[in-house]
Image (cartoon, rainbow, N blue to C red):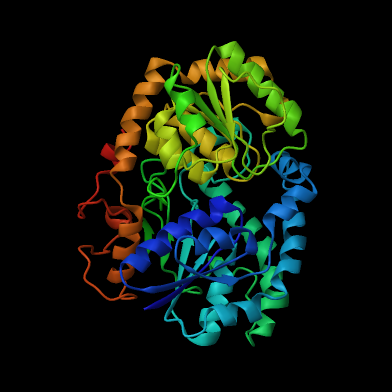
Length: 451
């Protein structure tokens, strides 16, 4: 089978799809990922064919480092996102047709699902939607940048908020596709309420997150499968610097501090607060500077902190005692898989949602607001996360998450749907009993998963 996956965004948006692509590749399929240039090397170094899509999210974030931070406090980022997406999408029809040449199956992730769906409609190809966050309304809060108190609303209010969220996102994306993509592909515009019209999209949907973290809803459509996270293992290839090994060996187990692809308008000032918090907590720390959320130019006590640009989460986090991070879906799952508590300083998007989920599950204290973070507040959160009850809860939750086989479950779903050859042990009969496929197959006890 020739399978093309469409995804754009930061590394956190692309990396799970690379893991899925590797699983498809190992199952004997030909796989191509269409994504922006910022993640092209990640795709290629994992042996996957890369096709280009216009879009540079790092340049967007770097051009105005306050843009994302404003997005946490309001929905003003949606207007900016629509403007940026219009510019990116001009070349998507041509690029999409080139990427989908000779394809048998298209998988569309995140906001470019509708690009894959439009290409599938134009070319007569089957399409599967994939999402790394719950995009369907349920009894749980939607993945929005909400005030923390709103993550404790009753189920009916959460469901209403979920529908409103879906409409808001759709109204951001619909003009981009209706004015640029669909006319270029010779297709009629999407109706105003297309996602809400039963059967409008022939939906086969993979949710690449854990039912340990988010319980599937019985109200979700039958062909929605929560597979578990798609984790790209990198420990076999990555060699840690000798200096890092020495740092780990010569003192107490450190904490991890890193914010991935998140930037900061005052990285030096923020890093100074972080280092002061580490000192006040009496901990040692490994700081990952990432795309620039932390600065590596400050004078650092080498006995207290070690600074590097990046290290694979699957190698580093199991060697840490807790993780301080932004609450991205991938980093959140990695910290839980490592069996360690978290301190979350969310920046924008779904990150406050993941912070609230970790607090609800008893593996993180309350999120630390980034706009008002102080060294004292962060030190207090670090000490709170290091409490025995949080460490115990994190250890138990990590064992459950490590038992999941997200990529394999996604492959089983594709086989069950008849989209790729091969037999599956799965039978999709109802959204509640079969929405999540455990490693052994069969029925799932959601109450047991989430206790």
